[in-house]
Amino acid sequence: MPKRQVATLRAARPTPPCWTVWLDAPHPPAPGAFVLAELGEPVRTSLFPAAIEAEGFAVMVPPGHPLIRLLPGTEVDLLGPFGRGFRLERANRLLLAAEVAWLPPLLPLLAAAPEVALVVEAPTRARLPAPERFPPAVELHLLAVDGSTGPAATLETALPELVRWAERVLLACDPARYPALARLVQEVRLVPAADFAQALIQVAMPCGVGACDVCYVETRHGDQHACTAGPVFDLLDLLPNS
Image 1 (tube, rainbow, N blue to C red):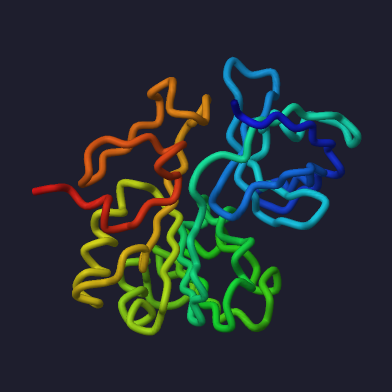
Image 2 (cartoon, rainbow, N blue to C red):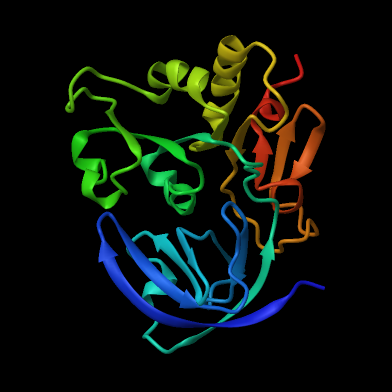
């Protein structure tokens, strides 16, 4: 049976373009794993941690999310944690890469290795996070697709040299981009080890146990449930079989 826990909303504050909401909970999810919250919607809402501490965790949600309608002190019914999160296995050089809208689940990993590089892509400079939000020890690469920070750049153009440097690569972006990024990793590393590159699939996962069949993901091992086989997958498993 899924583990039920009661969280208490500690605080919610705007951190444009999102809101950051802190929940005190006895069993916070690990990076890349998730909980399911009862927020008065037709189905439970999946929440990924953007920060984790002993007392609970924070999530970053868009304006209008049902979580930010709640007052501090409100109890929130949670199920979980669920899923397979990121696997680090003592990596010393960690590369994190994300589209800005998908970035928050990577944020708990900014201090997860002695050397961390973070690449964030946004459509324009105005959508990029401020550099001072990140620890000074992180090697930061902020990319604007429209060239408003300098030469136009994307994850695909910026990652090859960093993939050569990294001992582990963790990605969070539109799942439609993962096959191309997997081919990039193959070209740079030839035969990367299992889990060298990992990709987070952020889709609706209303049950958490693979019973509702909403979260099927096509992998080279066949269709799998994101909520149980993932939501973090070996990036190369997301390549088509052809």
